[in-house]
Length: 384
Image 1 (cartoon, one colour):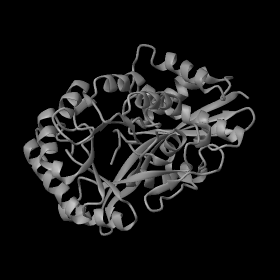
Image 2 (cartoon, one colour):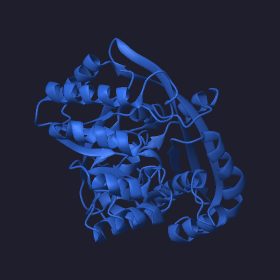
Image 3 (tube, helix red, strand yellow):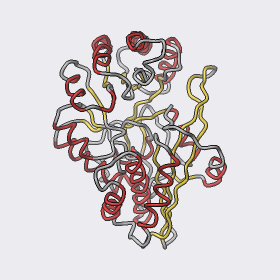
């Protein structure tokens, strides 16, 4: 079997976020990558939270010619070829996104060729995975946030994540202080805790939008709320700063969803900077590299979890590996995937059941993709 065609399609997808009667229109960008073989099998991968047009150009103009004629079943050989082609001196960024999408497509082909779902090929540790719902976005007012938390709890979710920080560093020249942002976040977190009671796990995510001082201040003021983990608290996932923060607070720290190189995870683990590592298969080099990171996490006895959304791709990793755990059910990202793919599983009582269909177990809807690809493309990293 040989690769005969590789093609990327950038998409900018319209979505609604929020509550009935209180929604916000936004968009989220992603890039689909198809890899076709001489046997007629087509595997489809994807990446997101990036400039979709740039990734598509990398795939179509640089990676595709280099992959022609290669055996798609030899994912290690293909991944190594892509590494030396796109990141020969340890660059990351757009290259890791392109590699992730291509690697997922190869695993999709492998599963179809062998008649097995990817999660079984990755190890088959369990047939279902627990999920946490990301619901709490910045545009919701405090009372609306609490209402949304109750609604998600009523849907059977006992693990809920909300955003904090709200791009405070990026927006620090606006007429609002970072101290005010943190003070409001404290009240928002307490409102959610009061609304859902003590038995629901609450996770918070700053999306790298705070400095050390304000991340510390926020964590200290909400420790009594029983936060399950604090994700990406500081800018750049700065490892020394994460380690310093972790030594000062009792809330577990999580990071890694946007990292492209396994060496970054090694450095986090060696520095004892995080309690949870969060490689994302759609960003961090696909299943091939995320397996390696999972092995490091196990060796360091540190929890592995999914951050950065795209649950239907990440569920295969966490169902496949023995140390797999939580998968993020990001409501806006899921809405995007429902526009693009058919046969996506839906969580029941906070659990996603893995498909038995070969490969990823869900297929792109080509007619809808053709219509969606006519939309104007975005000019930003596009994360709701």
